[in-house]
Image 1 (spheres, one colour):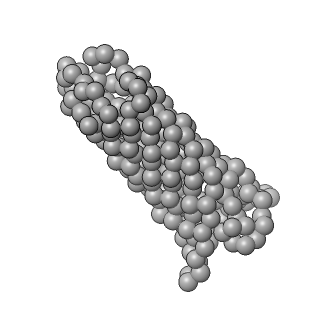
Image 2: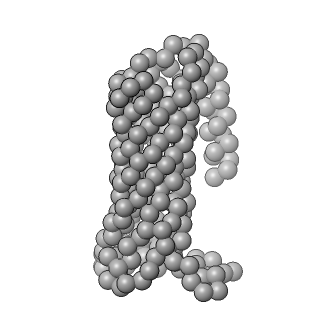
Image 3: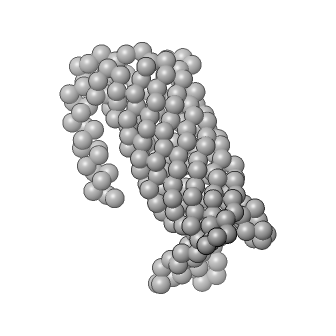
Length: 204
Protein backbone atom coordinates (compact mmCIF):
# COMPACT_ATOMS: atom_id res chain seq x y z
CA UNK A 1 0.00 0.00 0.00
CA UNK A 2 2.81 2.43 0.90
CA UNK A 3 4.64 1.61 -2.37
CA UNK A 4 1.46 2.32 -4.34
CA UNK A 5 0.99 5.72 -2.65
CA UNK A 6 4.64 6.74 -3.13
CA UNK A 7 4.56 5.71 -6.78
CA UNK A 8 1.35 7.63 -7.38
CA UNK A 9 2.75 10.80 -5.78
CA UNK A 10 5.95 10.62 -7.85
CA UNK A 11 3.99 10.05 -11.04
CA UNK A 12 1.73 13.02 -10.36
CA UNK A 13 4.73 15.25 -9.61
CA UNK A 14 6.33 14.41 -12.97
CA UNK A 15 3.09 15.04 -14.86
CA UNK A 16 2.65 18.30 -12.96
CA UNK A 17 6.01 19.67 -14.11
CA UNK A 18 5.14 18.95 -17.74
CA UNK A 19 1.72 20.63 -17.37
CA UNK A 20 2.93 23.78 -15.61
CA UNK A 21 3.04 25.84 -18.80
CA UNK A 22 -0.40 24.73 -20.07
CA UNK A 23 -3.23 27.20 -19.59
CA UNK A 24 -6.15 25.89 -17.50
CA UNK A 25 -9.64 25.90 -18.96
CA UNK A 26 -12.69 27.26 -17.15
CA UNK A 27 -14.90 24.32 -16.17
CA UNK A 28 -18.63 24.14 -15.68
CA UNK A 29 -18.77 20.40 -15.01
CA UNK A 30 -16.20 17.83 -13.97
CA UNK A 31 -16.21 14.07 -13.48
CA UNK A 32 -13.64 12.27 -11.35
CA UNK A 33 -13.43 8.45 -11.38
CA UNK A 34 -11.10 7.00 -8.74
CA UNK A 35 -9.86 3.89 -6.97
CA UNK A 36 -8.33 3.51 -3.54
CA UNK A 37 -8.50 1.89 -0.15
CA UNK A 38 -11.01 2.22 2.70
CA UNK A 39 -9.89 1.99 6.32
CA UNK A 40 -12.91 1.33 8.56
CA UNK A 41 -13.32 2.09 12.25
CA UNK A 42 -14.49 -0.47 14.82
CA UNK A 43 -18.25 -0.99 15.07
CA UNK A 44 -18.01 -2.27 18.65
CA UNK A 45 -15.12 -2.29 21.12
CA UNK A 46 -15.49 -5.25 23.46
CA UNK A 47 -13.69 -6.35 26.61
CA UNK A 48 -10.01 -7.35 26.66
CA UNK A 49 -9.28 -5.70 23.34
CA UNK A 50 -11.89 -7.59 21.32
CA UNK A 51 -13.87 -5.79 18.64
CA UNK A 52 -16.43 -6.07 15.87
CA UNK A 53 -15.28 -4.27 12.75
CA UNK A 54 -15.54 -3.91 9.02
CA UNK A 55 -12.39 -5.19 7.31
CA UNK A 56 -10.31 -2.66 5.38
CA UNK A 57 -10.78 -3.11 1.62
CA UNK A 58 -10.34 -1.59 -1.87
CA UNK A 59 -12.74 1.17 -2.89
CA UNK A 60 -13.98 2.30 -6.31
CA UNK A 61 -16.06 5.36 -7.10
CA UNK A 62 -16.77 8.47 -9.11
CA UNK A 63 -17.63 12.10 -8.41
CA UNK A 64 -19.43 14.68 -10.50
CA UNK A 65 -19.21 18.40 -9.85
CA UNK A 66 -21.07 21.50 -11.09
CA UNK A 67 -19.39 24.90 -10.79
CA UNK A 68 -21.31 27.48 -8.76
CA UNK A 69 -18.64 30.17 -8.80
CA UNK A 70 -14.93 30.00 -9.70
CA UNK A 71 -13.41 27.67 -7.13
CA UNK A 72 -16.71 26.49 -5.61
CA UNK A 73 -18.61 23.44 -6.89
CA UNK A 74 -21.64 21.39 -5.92
CA UNK A 75 -20.55 17.73 -5.92
CA UNK A 76 -22.16 14.31 -5.86
CA UNK A 77 -20.33 11.07 -5.15
CA UNK A 78 -20.94 7.33 -5.26
CA UNK A 79 -18.49 4.60 -4.23
CA UNK A 80 -18.47 0.86 -3.57
CA UNK A 81 -16.40 -1.53 -1.47
CA UNK A 82 -16.64 -5.33 -1.08
CA UNK A 83 -15.47 -6.32 2.38
CA UNK A 84 -16.41 -8.40 5.43
CA UNK A 85 -17.57 -8.07 9.03
CA UNK A 86 -14.87 -9.41 11.35
CA UNK A 87 -14.53 -10.24 15.01
CA UNK A 88 -11.18 -8.93 16.20
CA UNK A 89 -9.29 -10.85 18.88
CA UNK A 90 -5.92 -9.71 20.30
CA UNK A 91 -2.92 -11.71 19.04
CA UNK A 92 -5.14 -14.07 17.00
CA UNK A 93 -6.30 -11.34 14.59
CA UNK A 94 -9.64 -11.16 12.79
CA UNK A 95 -12.25 -13.84 12.10
CA UNK A 96 -14.69 -13.28 9.26
CA UNK A 97 -18.33 -13.45 10.31
CA UNK A 98 -20.18 -12.19 7.24
CA UNK A 99 -19.69 -10.67 3.80
CA UNK A 100 -20.43 -6.97 3.47
CA UNK A 101 -21.07 -4.89 0.36
CA UNK A 102 -20.89 -1.17 1.12
CA UNK A 103 -22.23 1.67 -1.00
CA UNK A 104 -21.47 5.31 -0.23
CA UNK A 105 -23.80 8.04 -1.51
CA UNK A 106 -23.12 11.67 -0.65
CA UNK A 107 -23.36 15.25 -1.84
CA UNK A 108 -21.68 18.44 -0.73
CA UNK A 109 -19.45 21.34 -1.65
CA UNK A 110 -15.90 21.49 -2.97
CA UNK A 111 -13.76 24.58 -2.44
CA UNK A 112 -10.66 24.83 -4.62
CA UNK A 113 -7.53 26.92 -4.10
CA UNK A 114 -6.09 27.03 -7.62
CA UNK A 115 -3.41 29.65 -8.30
CA UNK A 116 -3.06 31.29 -11.70
CA UNK A 117 -0.43 29.55 -13.80
CA UNK A 118 0.09 26.69 -11.34
CA UNK A 119 -0.54 23.08 -12.33
CA UNK A 120 -1.30 22.16 -8.71
CA UNK A 121 -4.73 22.91 -7.25
CA UNK A 122 -5.50 21.83 -3.65
CA UNK A 123 -9.13 21.56 -2.54
CA UNK A 124 -11.35 20.65 0.41
CA UNK A 125 -14.75 18.96 0.45
CA UNK A 126 -17.56 18.78 3.00
CA UNK A 127 -20.85 16.96 2.68
CA UNK A 128 -23.34 14.42 3.96
CA UNK A 129 -24.98 11.26 2.72
CA UNK A 130 -25.49 7.59 3.49
CA UNK A 131 -23.52 4.39 3.95
CA UNK A 132 -25.51 1.32 2.89
CA UNK A 133 -24.31 -2.06 4.17
CA UNK A 134 -25.49 -5.23 2.43
CA UNK A 135 -24.63 -8.10 4.79
CA UNK A 136 -24.85 -11.80 3.91
CA UNK A 137 -24.22 -14.98 5.89
CA UNK A 138 -24.82 -17.92 3.58
CA UNK A 139 -28.35 -17.57 2.15
CA UNK A 140 -29.36 -14.92 4.72
CA UNK A 141 -29.09 -11.32 3.54
CA UNK A 142 -29.89 -8.09 5.37
CA UNK A 143 -29.32 -4.39 4.77
CA UNK A 144 -28.58 -1.42 6.99
CA UNK A 145 -28.31 2.22 5.98
CA UNK A 146 -26.86 4.95 8.19
CA UNK A 147 -26.39 8.69 7.84
CA UNK A 148 -22.77 9.84 7.46
CA UNK A 149 -21.05 13.20 7.44
CA UNK A 150 -17.87 13.55 5.40
CA UNK A 151 -14.91 15.84 4.95
CA UNK A 152 -11.99 15.49 2.59
CA UNK A 153 -8.92 17.17 1.23
CA UNK A 154 -6.91 16.56 -1.88
CA UNK A 155 -4.94 17.98 -4.76
CA UNK A 156 -5.41 18.06 -8.53
CA UNK A 157 -2.30 18.16 -10.72
CA UNK A 158 -3.05 19.28 -14.26
CA UNK A 159 -1.70 17.10 -17.08
CA UNK A 160 -3.60 18.84 -19.91
CA UNK A 161 -5.91 21.88 -20.12
CA UNK A 162 -8.96 19.85 -19.01
CA UNK A 163 -7.48 16.73 -17.33
CA UNK A 164 -5.83 16.45 -13.93
CA UNK A 165 -4.57 13.62 -11.77
CA UNK A 166 -6.18 13.61 -8.32
CA UNK A 167 -5.11 12.43 -4.87
CA UNK A 168 -7.65 12.61 -2.06
CA UNK A 169 -8.23 11.57 1.53
CA UNK A 170 -11.80 11.59 2.84
CA UNK A 171 -13.32 10.83 6.24
CA UNK A 172 -16.84 9.37 6.50
CA UNK A 173 -18.22 9.73 10.03
CA UNK A 174 -21.32 7.72 10.92
CA UNK A 175 -22.90 5.10 13.16
CA UNK A 176 -23.72 1.59 11.90
CA UNK A 177 -27.31 0.54 12.68
CA UNK A 178 -26.76 -2.97 14.09
CA UNK A 179 -30.44 -3.44 14.97
CA UNK A 180 -31.49 -2.78 11.36
CA UNK A 181 -28.90 -5.23 10.07
CA UNK A 182 -29.30 -8.09 12.58
CA UNK A 183 -32.59 -7.35 14.40
CA UNK A 184 -30.62 -7.21 17.64
CA UNK A 185 -30.35 -3.97 19.59
CA UNK A 186 -26.61 -3.69 20.24
CA UNK A 187 -25.14 -0.27 20.81
CA UNK A 188 -22.54 0.63 18.18
CA UNK A 189 -20.15 3.54 18.11
CA UNK A 190 -19.95 6.40 15.65
CA UNK A 191 -16.78 5.74 13.68
CA UNK A 192 -14.35 7.49 11.35
CA UNK A 193 -13.88 5.62 8.06
CA UNK A 194 -11.05 6.90 5.86
CA UNK A 195 -10.98 6.62 2.06
CA UNK A 196 -7.57 7.13 0.42
CA UNK A 197 -7.82 7.36 -3.35
CA UNK A 198 -6.20 8.35 -6.64
CA UNK A 199 -7.87 9.04 -9.96
CA UNK A 200 -8.54 11.54 -12.71
CA UNK A 201 -10.51 14.79 -12.86
CA UNK A 202 -11.91 15.57 -16.31
CA UNK A 203 -13.40 19.03 -16.88
CA UNK A 204 -15.93 20.17 -19.48
